[in-house]
Length: 600
Ligand SMILES: *Cc1c(COP(=O)(O)O)cnc(C)c1O
Image (cartoon, rainbow, N blue to C red):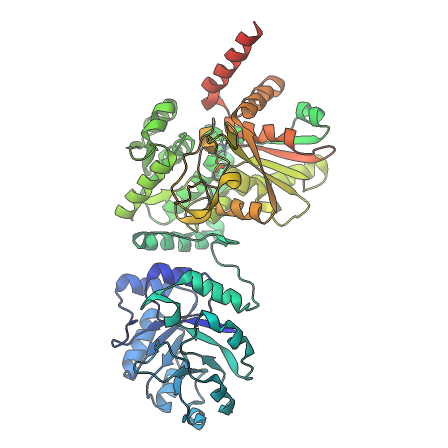
């Protein structure tokens, strides 16, 4: 069944509906209509770029005007809603698919339809004062009199309670429905949740993979002012995915500049301890000391491709800021990093590093003066400076960021496959364990195994002082569905939707959200989530330091600590060691001194 939503005008709404599995988007070009599309150049660009079927609705307009408007917006369909002649339908059908609308009433003579055989579709609507959007239904039994050959859409006053009646329409040429005013908050503003629910009620059997969504999570919930920037990015990202030249530049930098592939190291000590085969994927050995640089190289290369010269980024602990400043130095980009003043105080060495690399560090003074406030500042700056390129550091933010960051990090599991093959003669491990702040290192480690059901995926979150302590960052345990930084995901929030301050000993996991991919993996049961306390992470980090001579980042130490909570016997396990612990020395040493004092 085709579903057409008519009378659209708001860009953010159009984008959401286009991504929702609706087949046809209807735009009304009729000044007398409350839903007339008021357009400007930017809306023109926006509509032209939509890949959905786009229907322009006209009422008794001149042929030339319809033709020009159709070309301007690159419409796929023209819907004629007035007393247009059969000749006009013939003429337009050389350029577009044509839908001819008829107002149905008890005296309507369906034989009139025979004159319009060159239309691709008919639309049977209710006769009202204004064409379209009258909100009234005609008697659907009248359809029995339609004996023509052209399929038709049913229109006029279809509302959310009509799903059952629609399912009963069994005319052989019934092709779908057209909905409009009954799904509106005010004329022209659609009630999207109701539309979704309605489509669901109709249980139209087609795969509903909405672009930019992972199950119910994801999307792009952004202010209209950012729409063009985000959309431009989406198009550019789509383009480079199949661009061999881009890929080879990216791969070369990962190899020669970052130092990839990172080793897959068999840990004797951990393997013995757990009676398993435990490998560490050594992302700590990347240039700048963590996985973050895989993504910054990808995004800044893309920015260059798009002709951008001005890069902005947010940072919490400063790792993403340093990775961004590093690549900006390499690629001659101007770099501005937003950082909360509290974090600037806590992470001084990273602030100094960014400055040394030539970046401007802007203090975010609002709210709790930490990562989420830095992100808010960065978004604000982006709105005012749309020509800049915003490099997001994790699989969070509006579509296409989660998909794009996962794509650039996917090199981690790409390497794991051939490294495991070499070391174990199998490409698949039994278990992959990774810490999750926003989720980018985990996304990279899981990427090529997402469809391999035999590979168990574990997301390790920071429990802080404990799940029930009020000082935690374990979003998948404590969060509920909400919007954070432009996407729908799990969020730690109060009943009123206020963000709850997270806490973790590791700055990289200290985030009140989680990427939409992970929210979906966990909710759907594909991945399991484990929460590890500050104390357990510290201990696991110190253990690895003393047994393997590797000082892990406190974030990665959470993943190590989770090994105690998983049944590992005889399994092949990969732990993604996301970064090195130099930045965490003070925290580790404080714990070590404490322990040694206790012993004395
Ligand atoms: C930033 C960071 C993390 C957390 O970010 P994700 O996007 O969840 O990977 C984990 N480990 C290290 C070393 C980091 O720097």
